[in-house]
Image 1 (spheres, helix red, strand yellow):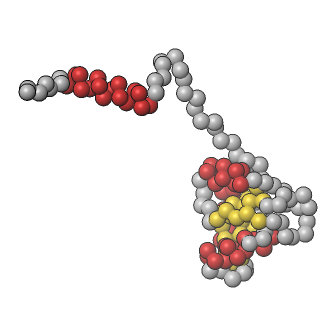
Image 2 (cartoon, helix red, strand yellow; image 1 turned 45 degrees about the vertical axis):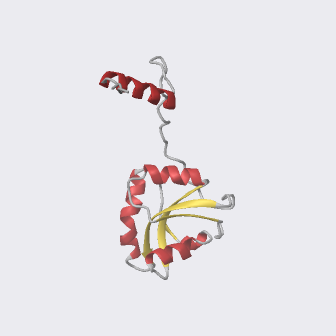
Image 3 (cartoon, rainbow, N blue to C red; image 1 turned 30 degrees about the vertical axis):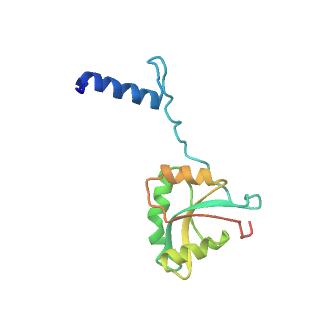
Length: 146
């Protein structure tokens, strides 16, 4: 029995039909919405009304001491350029943060620059938009007096 060979255009048409069936059809009139533009999230002002938990994006960590200010200043300046007013603070003000940062860096008396956020989503958006370095993102409860 002789076998019939399909022509190349017929094979291409069959493949196109199969792919269209698998992926669905879209007409030229349909438009695909672009993803929403991310906006810089608002940082928290830590105090008595700090949500539990809150998230901190830590951008720099140093050993407590005279050289800490110089080591952390570039990160403070980067965050200032992005519109955030920050300063170095003790990560022990967030439960679990000091331990995590110490484990990551090997420092025993940690001081760090971090931006606090009310939600994990806000911290993630900041982490996505911020072009500077990020050491860690930590969740936890506020543990310092206001």
